[in-house]
Image 1 (tube, rainbow, N blue to C red):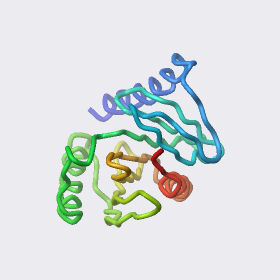
Image 2: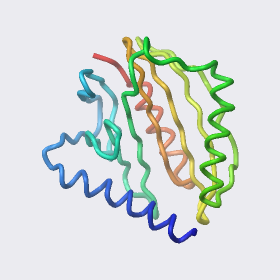
Image 3: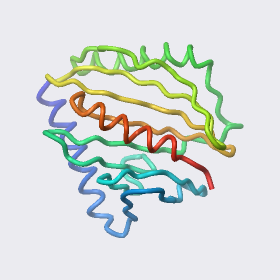
Length: 186
């Protein structure tokens, strides 16, 4: 069971890289502030030096891949998940409970262990508001970190999510903060 899960994960990460190569016409960006068209919306976001951004693939609008570090590579995804008049989120503390419950269920299927919650925090800068939450977990003999932010911007809702190996948490967290703080709608 564990081996099958690892193989599926490895396959998905490999396909993510191959999808970018197969879609050679897709824009790539690295370093500084970049603008992307997500659906009918333009968004602007910092892509840290050493990271590469690719539009589309596997049901997300934008994938930002970090530099390879040790035996891992961080991935950040951005998805436009709707318009604010069509979406309603519960209070953040309720969302925190749902987040923990959903992640715990996901971990049960992967023989994983929930290590700690990265508490919810409100976000507010320029024309963007939202909240961020995350967790640390272990599965398949490694520790991982996931951070997820819901961003409200000019009538649209986006989810920005990072996934990294626990050993790379500090570097990924800095890059993720750059992406969040540099996020803007056009």
